[in-house]
Length: 100
Ligand SMILES: [Zn+2]
Ligand SMILES: [Zn+2]
Image (cartoon, rainbow, N blue to C red; front, side):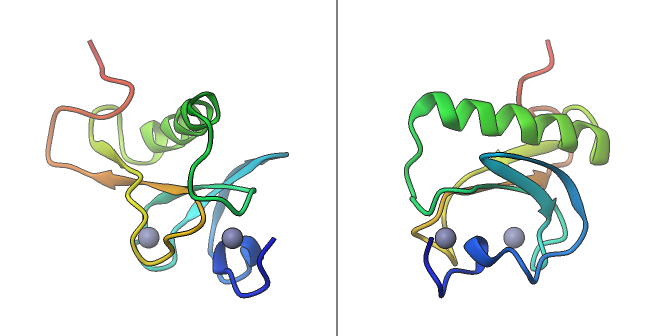
């Protein structure tokens, strides 16, 4: 936990879609898209954790934005020391997991 970290506080965020012991998913206040946040204050989750978070986010994003209508964006921009990933809308195709 970091006292000055917005994602640790998780207070200012809006609608919450899903949560579990090690993650939560809410509508990002800044972007208005589904956002998954790892509950651990660390920028680099192990690969297995990352994939698990993506799967949770994919379930929400497929429902909110539509299958293939979004892309995973886990570049840490404004908050660089706490792992999170956005599901950003995209015009068509793509998405994660890929629809075959
Ligand atoms: Zn944090
Ligand atoms: Zn955002």
